[in-house]
Image 1: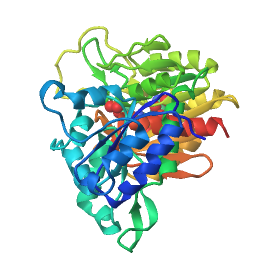
Image 2: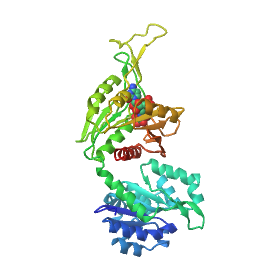
Image 3: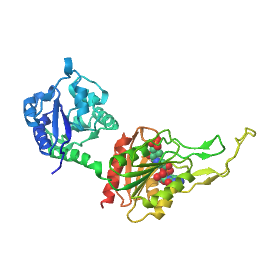
Image 4: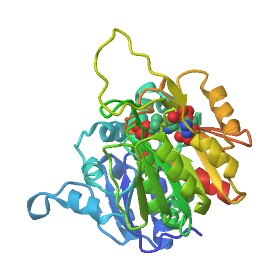
Length: 400
Ligand code: PMT
């Protein structure tokens, strides 16, 4: 059975008929070792009483942002929790959470919480499919919250389709899995390339690209959180990171990134190549600033080393090599071409055609294509959540 021993779980209940299942969910959470505190919207109390949930959770149930001395109980609860789960989440509360309409205890705590937030929507099928709800759902996911997917089946309306709240046992499994992640890369060494490369033309100018390093840093942070030792080879980026288990190697050019990657790769279990490496560099690098003399200036470019392809050749059986593909057209075909050419185990495709994906955004939308011809598509999410999805996939591969 899933364990949540000593975890502080804040359960937020909103007004759906699925709220009757929250008695079971509370019991399962308590049984799995969690400390449970519950907050409810007024609408939720029409479906299940605060007394029932207070009895099962062995804690007072909160419904209102208090006044007087304890007016800031929403902040205290938000800070107390290791994890907040909103179940069931109605269309109304989803809209309020997505748009910071802070007129209930549930939304006040949600906005104040610093812990990971999971939500399990419950709606009728047409309501669930409505573009307005789907837009709010996307917003919530893009803020880094975690969706516990709806089930498909018979609905309270008598209709059948997608929209049922996930079953209480499934919700407990998802939450327990989240905490297990804390250790699933313990003892592993992970190499990550991130950011752009700058290829000098002269002491002043360079050929570069728009990579910020955010995707690679999100990967490094998640790998560190999961207990890995991380070697992050970072091209010129404004971002920085420090951690006792991090070896940060700062480089400027593709040649330098290549040298660092070749040096560190043999000791690694996993390498994830998120850097946007310049494919070409100027053949000559002027020692002094090039003066503006003629109408045209022709730069001769030569190919840079392909870091990914080189690591793909050296790769040992126990090592996992993961690439990225940044595409603008023919996305999947191009990504599969790179997957094969560079000997990746899987490749993470992001397309500049998808709004919110690629360079510099805090979000990304990815498709994972693997060498066993499987394709997994993901929604637009925060780069933090995307990093977690990629590392989940890496762990699945390591356990094969
Ligand atoms: O840094 P951000 O602003 O957060 O943006 C993230 C990102 C868009 C840079 C990232 O998500 C991404 O897509 N990185 C790969 C960008 C890229 O250059 O892709 P590519 O399709 O050109 O290269 C394919 C793969 O080969 C990549 O894993 C790349 O790191 C690697 N490569 C490419 C050329 C080269 N000379 N050496 C390499 O290792």
